[in-house]
Image (spheres, rainbow, N blue to C red):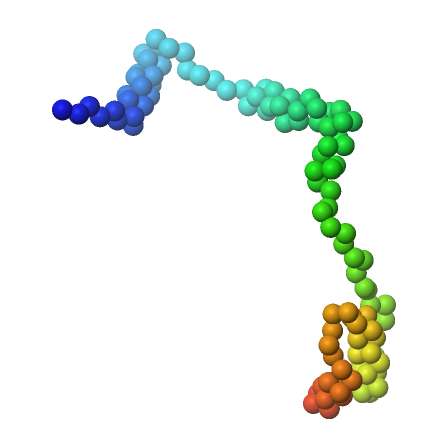
Amino acid sequence: MSVTNNVDTSENYDAQQTVEEIEGGDRKAPSANIEADYEASKKFSVSEIDRTEEGAAAAAAATAPQHEMPEPNIATSSPDTTGNPDDYKEMAADLGSARSNTSNVSDDLVKKALEKGTAAD
């Protein structure tokens, strides 16, 4: 013979019994003061150590970036839409020099690209 413990049944029974006691006036209904609870919770949102300089230094160290980020190269000029291939060659050369470490674009490849496409007027 095995005895099973059905938690759902006991929880439901306890909840039902509580409801009946409240309805019968034997027990006071629970109340919640949300504003007071919220204000009280603010005390626990930051630990005591975090309110000190030592805690601020620890937080800064924990959230500091692990690697240095390079500054982005931002284009300072915009191309003219004249359709002149020389403008695009110059722009491609500028991009090639800016990305010299990461790009394997050759002058021949740029020439082929310029031959295949033309700018829309």
